[in-house]
Amino acid sequence: MRSYLALFAVLAFAVPAAASPQPAINFKVQHYLVSGRDTTALERAVFATTPVAMNGQRYGAVTHNEFRTSYSAVGTGDGGCEIKNVRVILDSTIILPKLAPGQYSRAVLAEWNRYIGALTAHEMQHANNGKYTAETIAARLYNFRAPMPCLEMRPKLDRAIDSLIRNMGQWDANLDRDTNHGATQGAFLRKGIR
Image (tube, rainbow, N blue to C red; front, side):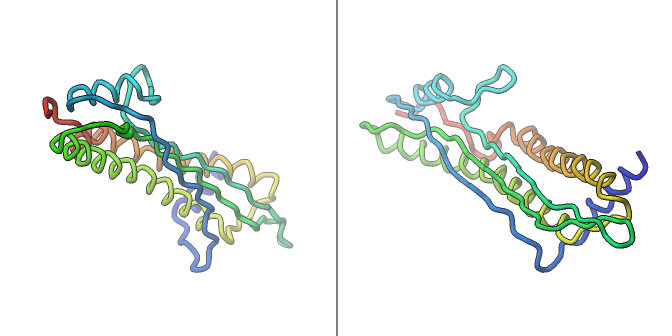
């Protein structure tokens, strides 16, 4: 256990190298359509139509960040192991509501645009955390060396990467908790606007 913790500590505090490889980031936004005559109806439509359901709750938007990491572990002459051919891929997808074509008052359109702007900004914070996480993994793996054989090091390094992703994912959970899923940042529709 001590060598795993030591390896994680080295990975966690490694200084990013100047020329570390950049992760490949596949970013996309998906929409689902909503409509309603006023903002109260639009809010109902968002929560009735959303494909986003987690832990029994429905949400208007979500960001999915999925990481794939590969590398070569190469033995060194002194019995240690070094990492080569680092490849980190982030698939980041934001799912957002989109106003269906139709006739809407200026007041409803203004409120929708305010809401969708705040909601998008909140989800971009999650997407940017995914990007930061991918960059951190790539930088910390670049030229990584350990004084243990590759067969011993590789599973420990994989667990350390998984732990890093989980720990950095806690930032997302804290953001949602602290902002009430973006509501304190303006990601809500004011009811009753016609």
